[in-house]
Length: 256
Image: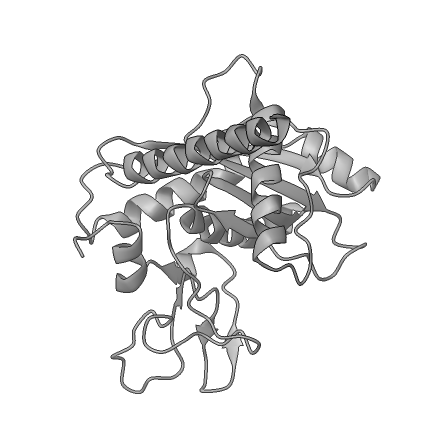
């Protein structure tokens, strides 16, 4: 009897999660109202410089994301400013780590754990909950030259971003945050594995450009601009990035 009860409860939870994910996807992609995006800073290490940076963090570094999406949306079927970025209180404990080499079952289990973490970590703040929650884990550049992979989940509207705790890196941090933010809205990566080269044509800002190289700008979901057929560079700021037509379709900025 208890076995059937546990199975029934599990099915009810899965149905509720699926229904919530579907509703979130519909309501966040109709672009009738501005989306509220919450940035939740997390200390990614115990370095004093990271602590000082996170403690002094303001909304200012994230305004560039608002401006970028407002600028890019004007070329599509969006009539209002797409998002508002708000800085929320610091989170003490980091999110569950994504299991390396995980199969479908472990990935699904991690996804549920991530959503549970996001709910627990962000409830009870006394502020209106955002539509999308982005957890930004800050690391001292002197300690970690290469950051762990960032993630954006459409199911749950959650992003996990690894960033550098340094003002000189804020513009590049904004590029990564925007990339993962668009993942939560259904955008897909437009670079190849394992070379990370932008995929032609959707990963190119100007696929019809003659000559094709170097590309002057990067497509946001490609993450880099192709300077030749075998070389690509990461943009330094959102001023060097565009939302391409394929990405715009995926996030419902244009009719399919």
